[in-house]
Image 1 (cartoon, rainbow, N blue to C red):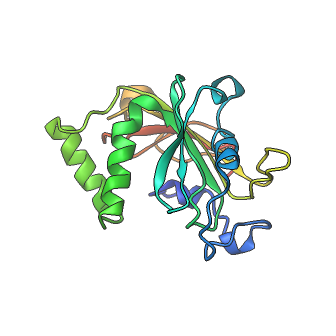
Image 2: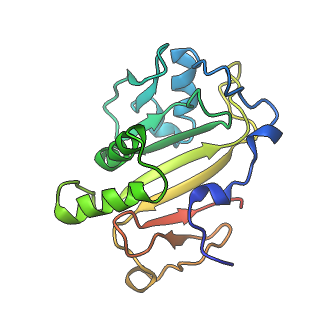
Image 3: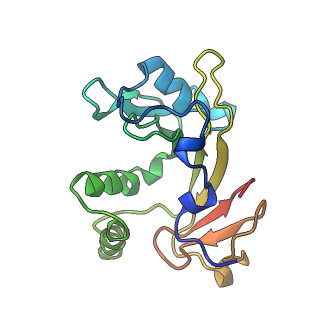
Length: 197
């Protein structure tokens, strides 16, 4: 199997085929309480209550909806994206994640985002932690009545900058249900675990 270049390739759910997918043309954010409930769903239950949640205001801008004392920051569904997607990452990864959002907002696209971030990590301008977890759900839809996301697929990630197969003993080839390393040898090297591909 060829190495996959991005996690979207692991979850080939076209938004148009998802029952209950949000209409991106509406671009209306969920109510704040629903954004918070949806955003924390990827996390193990013991981390949900104290997670910080970033979501979207009426103006469509990303803002802090809830400040928590726990180790995770969670992103609510983006109203401009039809496919349901939420993510929670360890707060130590915030500088790296925030820089990616900042670059994309300024018009930087594709692989150039990582080119800039990698150069900044290597120069010491951008700090990467030595490890950090990320949990996501993609696809399906958020059911506010039940507080669940039927049809969403989970993805689990552990960032270990510069990790390789040689340094960890973990394969660099994607395998369903088994850990493997994506972007080996780079600042955003991470162990992937995809229950379903």
